[in-house]
Length: 304
Image 1 (cartoon, rainbow, N blue to C red):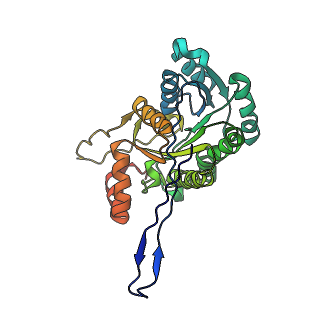
Image 2: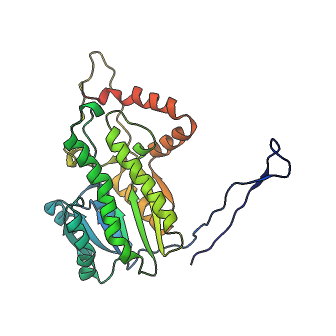
């Protein structure tokens, strides 16, 4: 059920004419919720990290899951880890950057489960911790293709099917790196910023439909994303350097729980981790100063 609440704020523009009023804002809020129990949810990047944890949380809540990943062995491991619930999991090995393969996926999911009710675009990679000038075009294209076009491909393929359901949901995973620049992750941040704006635009386009949309901004999550991305970022410590504090991370299981809860509660956006919340706040308060602060903390990761 779509409930519209119109908010109109009218302000007198004294500097121009007292009788001129400025229309500021009108919005529509969707208050409906989607219980994932018995729903069929597609999860990309399901072979490890947040994706694997998402499969587990969804199964615990009674959903059926179409698990998607590039790696057949890790995908099968995810299914086996589901234990007695694994019969509610179908596995689909494919490259989300391959548009032709992705276009055939919705029918494969429907063949396995009968319907499809939701899509969580979680798959993503980071780049080598190097300056943009030191990236070659192969790395640049891979970053954009996986993080942005992969999300575009999956959404484009599944949206026509989701629009036919009584209720459905699309969740796109961006990053706290889409708020502020992280040294050595310029292309990664740009790809996630593109995902952010794409998701927000999709939300507005689907306001009058049965498809809900959520954008997720994870902070540092305890996953093996660097290994899966083929990235090593251990920089040599300067002589006489003080030991650095271990970066605080959010467990993948906790992150998955937050994401699924946001999906069920029809959240517009969700921040995962105290670091993501802090970066969001800093980006709003003082973006330039925040960029300098982040460089002072993380600039040493850049490969010389």
